[in-house]
Length: 427
Image 1 (cartoon, rainbow, N blue to C red):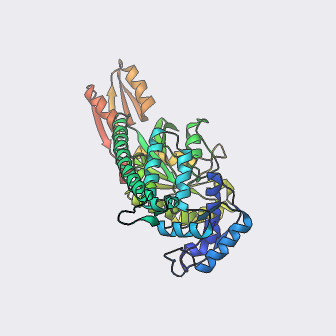
Image 2 (tube, helix red, strand yellow; image 1 turned 45 degrees about the vertical axis):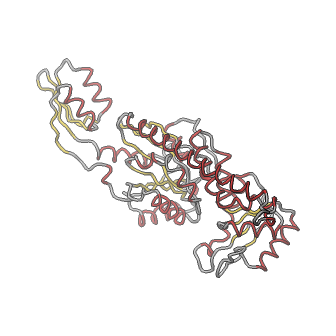
């Protein structure tokens, strides 16, 4: 593995940490790391990214270790990749290519496979020349064009057509998702976002109690958006969606192709930004997630930071104090204790109440079934008996209020609190 950050950059100060993350990516992809090399470059070499001396040192390490693959933490241009493969005599990949490879092996649903294939083809298209070096294009020229050039142009046309077809299919998927969302029962909608392996799937499994939800201590364990209805207590239910995790230097092709999946986050009332509180650079990971959310035009969404894995923090009191200072409305959580999500549940119930108008309803004695439904679906705050009628003060969803009015029930709206969508960033 090779790291070559710009000298004086933020990446240069975290070389070891970034190589450690790349090690985990390589492990997830199914390879074994046999050596590391790093160089802080003042100006990246257009030909090989790193300097000539480092290329020679890298070639020596490859020969001595018997490595069959070299992976760069930085993105390589097509020319840099081709030149390095020629010098090193082994396959060369960059970080985005490794991430794409992981996604291709872990994609399960039809939609995820379409998205990954689109990202791979868009990554591959400018690099096709490198794939055809074995056909030797040096015979090119008028009347002497080699088979590689003809096949290269043919492949480019095939790939461009396939890219257009995949984009069309993903647009169909997006329309299908919109129709599904339109047909759902109205309730508080929540999307889990965050750095990969921050514990989003663990939180969803703990909230639902559904142990079949896959949870792994690996990068990118979840690629497909998974949505479940959750009982938050006190007659409050919410719809929670687990989304694909983000990572530093996430390939922009991949971000673009996963827009359809992340539409669940776009349509959510609130985002839960799950943070691995036990990670040494959790602040850096938060910045990465914020950057990707901005690329997806989700930066303005109401967001609650959820500092997960608080049980693994050496000094949770000190961390909580720092979190309160930076994010006054953040929530700490752990899925390793039975009460570890109590604070999160309470905050979500509070958000749900903000979107529910408080109304006063008078029901005749014969409306026993409707009275039971109000207790079941709403939050009854007071109840008075007036002769044979029952007067209730209750919090309900707006759609429930409209249903009562359509049924001829007199509803007096007492107070409308702020909608969830008006909650500020980090609130």
